[in-house]
Image (cartoon, rainbow, N blue to C red):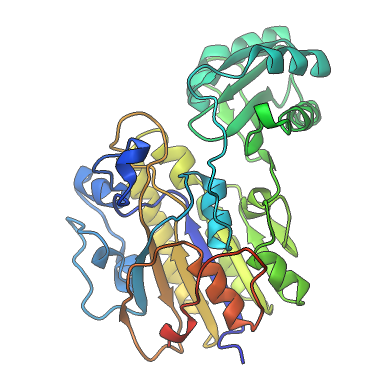
Length: 396
């Protein structure tokens, strides 16, 4: 018999809590996203996360450890051979990626791919390098607006990103070009995890702003996940934020697109006021995209404070038979060199108004304990070739 009618899994995108044992193999030495944010700012006010035990997982200068946390807290290691968004989320739902997704960070995309993309779209490609999304707009957007050329760039992730001015390039044209790029990058030698449409507005350098009309064209997961198991057994699987994009719609019954991380929390609070039976799976991307990759610990800290305010509202409206899990998909230490993700452990914070116990959980060797716990709660068997073991009996 299931313990909870509804489970909310909220992913604070990139909130690592310290280096993995193998972090040096990924070029990440001494990384700690949350710990270094705390060290970098004077004030840091996250009372609701504190009550859930976040500061028991890594020392925070301004936030003492909680002696009587609301629920259970622990750390999760990533088993997959990666540190990116897609593999992090896929692992949460049971899939271990032994081979990391391909990146083109060092030299941009191959000449053959760019030529084929130009031929198929009718646009000359400019950019074709690894860059920050805001920096490449300042560098090349005026040229794109004047010429109709197309900005293509990548990052430390396995992504091909295309920028388009909503007024001059047009959203539909941007989406058309991205669909072509997705088709081309299904070839093994060019395969990337996501093609991302990056629309923006503005007319000149210093005024360009990316809009919420972003769209991700992702690879489908390489196997069935906990989400598929839930959907196939008649349970609701509600996506908030970019979850539906990360799983390419697989296993999703309802999708809500977010304009920001604050908006994503507002959507989650509204969803909590509705009757459903199953999982609400939330990704809050601003932490990674706006602050982690841009190496801005102050901005990251203020975003966490905004999240904490909304978290307090969510905790108030959760029902007796709800379970809340807060976690992350990787690290992006804003004090570390470069702009890449960082290979880190992530938090596992679990709370329900019906819990009678609290305290520390043993460190887990995979993110997949999340998906297996959800499936176990609803009495649904995990698909074949998935990993992870349930923590449900420990969350009482």
